[in-house]
Amino acid sequence: MIKDFFAMLFPQVCVSCGKPLYKYEKLICMLCEYKLPKTDFHLEKDNPIEKLFWGRVPIEAAASYYRFTKGGNVQHLVHQLKYKGKREIGVEIGELYGRELMKSERFSEVDLIIPVPLHKRKLKARGYNQSEVFAQGLAKSMKKNTDFVTLYRAMESETQTKKTRFLRWKNVDSIFQLKDETTLMGKHILLVDDVITTGATLEACIQTLLKIPNVKVSVASIAWATH
Image (cartoon, rainbow, N blue to C red; front, top):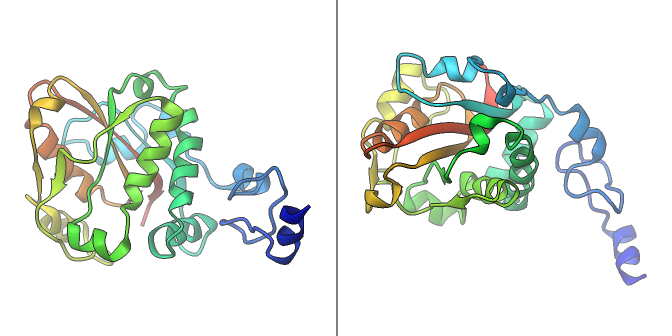
């Protein structure tokens, strides 16, 4: 009764559309779960995200959960995750997407999950890595291990917003490094990020990971922005 009373005074709202949630709903209402623009790229070989890396770096598979459009509900979700301290959004989306990825043989066979790392200065300012909480959700529903240590960002890069594809690539070139790479030898890694635009940051991470003997890399993200 007390819980219901407080729910009336301070109703929980959907982090996507802002409408009140029903008791059985968690963070995202059922209508938004149904209506948010999903890509289903995990079921499609040679999908647009995989083509993004053609001729750049060799990957096993790549996919994003949602399509990102400016001003849309997916952008609202990502904004709250990155800038409003709502890390639970990343975990929830990760759990939802992890269940979908396990339906694809190419993703179900990964060995462990690694998020794109933040520089320690940005991590301290934000308080958490949005890609890391997404990885936590994926790991829970996929029943996979995570590694938040081996791949790290050695240098801080400028924001990627409004940069061209070439400048995005140049901005992150050679800024990622590895600790004790022997722990990843022979592994199939699922590298995860929040939003894929040009893929420059992921490309830099993949180039670093592929220095490890017999490593394979696949990619997954919360959203894919076409512009």
